[in-house]
Every structure is written in C-alpha cells, then in structure tokens.
Image (cartoon, rainbow, N blue to C red):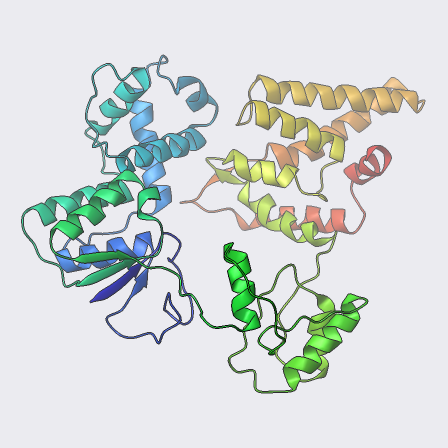
Length: 410
C-alpha cells in the first residue's frame, strides 16, 4: 500500500490524489484522522467512537468529584461547568499529543498534579484522543506487528508535526516502511506559465514570450470582466478547467448563466442575513447545561430581538465572566434597567409609567436571556418552541415592547 499523508488532507476531495496523478485503489490520501483509522484497522485496534459531547460530560463528572473548592478550575467550574470541562479536556488531549500518558510528574506544579489525579479517577472511560490512539499504535508496533504499507509520502513538513506524530513516523520508518517527503511538482520549460510559477517560488523568472499559457483579462469594471471570462470559457472545451474562486462575483454568475455555463456559485451577503440565525440560536440557548458561546453568538447578532444596548451590556459581562448568574451578569441587568429608567425619565414619563415599562422590558429580556432550560435527553416541549417562534414572528413583523426601545436607543 502506498499512502500519502498530510496534516490538512482529512475530508473529501476530488480527485483523491496529492500530486495530480490518477487516483487508485491501495493509494489512499489521508490526514491525521484517516491515517490513524488506517493504522488501527491494520493492527486490530479499532474501537467504538465516543462522541465529543459524551467525553465532555464524563470529564465534567471527574472534575466535579475532585472539586474541593481549591482546585485551579474551581472558580470557573462553579460558573460554567460544561465550558470548563470542555476547555480542560482540550488541555488534556494536547498533553497526550505531546507525549504525556497521565502519570504524575515530580515538581510539575498543582495543575499537572490535578490533571494526573483526574486520570486515575475510577469513573467511566473518556474515549481515546488522538494522542492516546498513537500511544496504543506504538505499543503494538513495538511488539513486532507488521503493516501492509510499503511507502508513505508526507506532504506536510515532518519537523513541524506534534511530538507524538514525529515519534509515530520514526517508528514506522524503523519498521522498514519507506517514508519520504512529497515535494510539489515543478514544471520545466520556457513557457509563460513556468515563468510566473518561478516568480511565485522566488526563483529567477524568464521574460514572458506570449505563448498563451498565461492569459490576463483586463476590464474597466467587474461586469465587463465577467462577460469576458464567460465568453472565454464558452469558446472551448472546459471539462478540465478549474476556477479558483476568491470572494466571488455575482456578475460572473449571471454571465455564466446567460451562456449556459455552470455557475461558480456565489451568494451575495445581506445585512438581513443574521435574522435567519435568530431562531436556531434562540432554540440552542434553551438547552441545559447552557454553553456560553451560544448565548454570546445570540447577543452578537447584528439584528436580534434584544435592543443593542442590552446585547452590548451582556456581551461584556460574558466576556469577563463566562456563564450566567454571576456578579458581572447581575451588574449588566442593573445597568440596563438604570439606563432605560434614565432615558424614560428624560422623556417626561412619570414613575408609574416608567415602572410599568421597566417591568415589561424585563419580562421580554428574561424570555431570551434567562428562559427555562431543558435537558437534551428530555427535549424541549412543543409549546415552548411555539412560544419562541411566536415571539420571533412578532419581532420580525415589527411588534413587541422591545422594538420601540430598539428604535429609540440603537
């Protein structure tokens, strides 16, 4: 088997090749995930895949069982247990990728001591991270197991790979597998295309001769350029033509459509596009435990059911203290109420009218910021989903108490 391995080669591509040659059975092109899957399949190490959410939940249980109020994570864990577990679990996985195996390290400091004690917890297994999978592969290879691999072409710079990946490649090389760096192909000749490639590599470039291998289309505006490109594409056989799309151009899509050509596919951005994100995010923040990143996304939308001055206050609170209900969160509530009270008093409203409007505004803000939340295992009641949809429909149609506030203070 001939394998091509690159750090960014996971995921689908066409053709499945790294050098432009024809793809073939027995010549896989893989990234880190695909490479580990291939080695584990050959060595009989394939195990059940543990979803990321399950790993976080189990690690959260470990953190809770070890939390005595003085751990390095105790303060954050009280405010947002899920996000804290997710972050520390990522640290743990990085440690394994750097050669750690969960052992105590003398004079390592309280954080690593705590991390090591968490590894020895007799709770549910977390599921293997890439670093642990490499440790298992290395252990089996050390016992003399063979792999059906003859050569491995490494696209990425081997020196820049994480430590455990370098160890893995070194062990494969020691077992007799040929591992070589795959250099990018270099065109030779004296064409204009070769000249521009040499210039981009920093090599000495020859003068352009105008042989047609490099064509530059110039136009006064993008509409003329789009017409010229579409006409040029329609003038010959373009079954092997590849368009490298940058930011995109709606004019080119329109020109290709007029000439019956496939469109590059470009979607024009719209200032109203954020409105389409309100419903999925409004439902996402109903889950318990709440992930602060989701409510931060909701508050950061250019258009949302909350007034901008409210969103800004709570965004700052979340940035200072991830999670809800903390000191910064309470301060944000007080600041919003104080601001609205001052503005309404400046408008000449009496205390009774101001109190009534504050009460309505608070009810509306709490509907979005502090709703009743539901565990994913139980689901969200249909009535609650309908309430959210109704509120969004009112907001998008111009109704609701907060809409007047948004118009006045945005």
